[in-house]
Image (cartoon, rainbow, N blue to C red):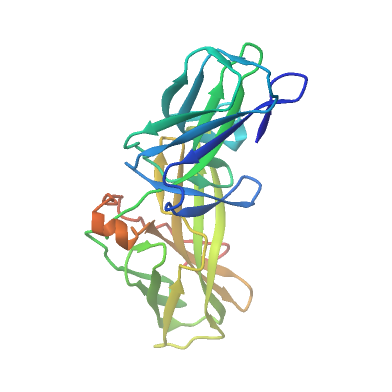
Length: 328
């Protein structure tokens, strides 16, 4: 990538090469404009090392500078206020003292056992990113290159993973009991459950299970919530009868999911809910939400190295009943 050092075109090309690039896995992450990019994947506690190569573009011309440095940065950016980014990690290595460059140069760098407390994330209103930033400091305008990285937060199997059992209904009209096999699921898991119809006196024509993602940004009066229906599972199409039992199997692996994130650096949260929706013949909708926790399972090689941390979170909370007209 070329950078303009003045009015007369490119002066220096900056390139960053990781030492373990050949063996390191990559991961995909959506950008702010919805495109998917692939970058090298890191975990909490891993070191980040490599080389910074400077290629002087104009032969024989001196590149004067006030110093060269590389930073490892973890940053949160709210799209509603892009001028106010928050850097929760900022590690700096000085690569060169003030001087001049007349030929191509290469500098080694290493950030040892870097703490990466959060998962990379791009949502509707917020982005959390990690990157290496090389800066050649100059009097008029600095030359800067950013090199994106992706971080995944890993977890072990939860010690406690209770099933979810709930009864919902409308007095003398509808009584349903539903059960999900657990309350915490890894990102490749399967949600298994059953719906029992104990009393049916209204004409239900459609029933589905939705997986809903809620992104909450800001605090206090400036809080904003973005809701997205990630998945839909049709439970039935037609009228159920008393005593009927319907199984549920929703495979999570086919969807673009992140782990549950709670109060990330007091900037944002990402939470997931199972939403049971019933529609009657008059097109009235009844629904019941239940929060679940999603977590990222460590790959087999990393589990053997015991290179992960336990996922701890509050128990999911049942949401109050809501309906567009009648309540369940």
